[in-house]
Length: 295
Image (cartoon, rainbow, N blue to C red; front, side, top):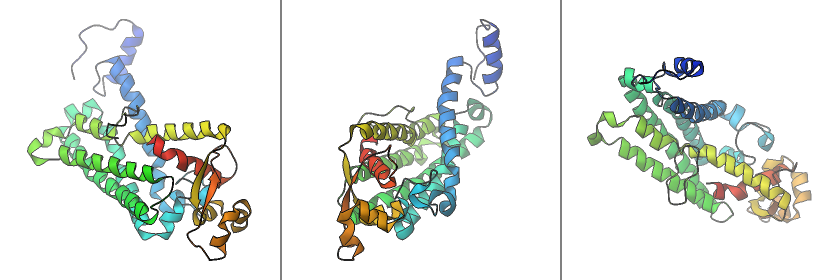
């Protein structure tokens, strides 16, 4: 964290240096990158801290109509199966607090002037991220066993691979023979960020890639909506939970009749994928259809 070797070119540069020098940044372009990517990551995590209120925010009583919380229909599995519930609670309790720490780790003044805080924060971030990854793997493993068929199987495998890769990276970075000094900003960059740019198919997905995934997911869902002709299979029980009306579910999906009369409790139906529509089940179908590709 050295002082700049050249005097400021103009008054704007001089004023800017008064802003970014106190946080330990010596170059203006480094401050821009730190502010954009660090700010985006911090904002994403802060916006999702309310998810720690599992029943009040993440899985609200209004089910799929919630604008803040889980994706439409997902809370059916979280509320009705203990393994899903434990897994998602572990994931939220671990990954959200852990996501705040890299913002601290990325600040150079902390690394240079508060080395103990920097190292403790690094170890704590790794510990919390392991808890969060373990919860995510519980969800993915349970879904693959309980729902072996369906359009989202490739996405579940992708989540498992991403989680295992991140878990391996955690273990590698936390290896005792590497020394405490290795838990530094480089470790946090490798573990938490994808620089908001999607990796190619051969690269491990880092935790920060969730932001990029959301952008691709919503973009793809919006692109497929006007094209039409896209459908995805969905369990009738999930459709009914998402729509919050058995009558509407049966009216819009006659194939679910065996589910409602009890002859086929595991009955599935085809749902039109339409992210721009008013049917919550169709919005959920659009997100389910594009989730694997976005990952």
